[in-house]
Length: 214
Image (cartoon, rainbow, N blue to C red; front, side):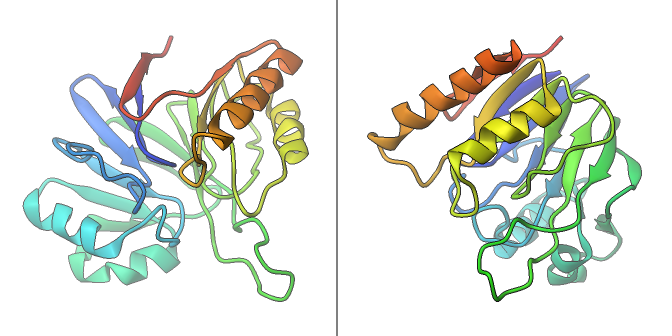
């Protein structure tokens, strides 16, 4: 499987000539992200992960394309009919030839007085876990973690604790679109140190950079 990191929290996974794209949000505007994709997975409704108009246009442009998302997200693009599929915690589905297990129920807390919105993480082929905006720990091994590196809902010590809970063999930083040229090196350093803690290969991929997974 090939993993390509795009802007912010967007990841594209490819194998056997098929592709799925996770969270092509407003900060992920590189050309070609969705070209030839078979499916889009959406973790939650925030604009940096999901732009309804963009997904609708992609569905209109490619009649083969399908979407998997939580009920809250699926409701916003329900006009696409049976090409939009609701999933939730505990579901196991086959998406474009990939085995996808769904983990997580809630977004991390953003405001002490506001209940969290739904958030669904996706474990793909038992290899890559994209948690969205939550520090969800699946009940099965995670060899490759898409690791949130910076967010209004997360402190750096929480990132270290999350890594220690999952102990992946490798991790690639996501959710870095709010960082400038000063913050990126600092966060990249912490991502690397988190990997040293658990003996894993942890790093940040530049937008558009790909890696081939074992």
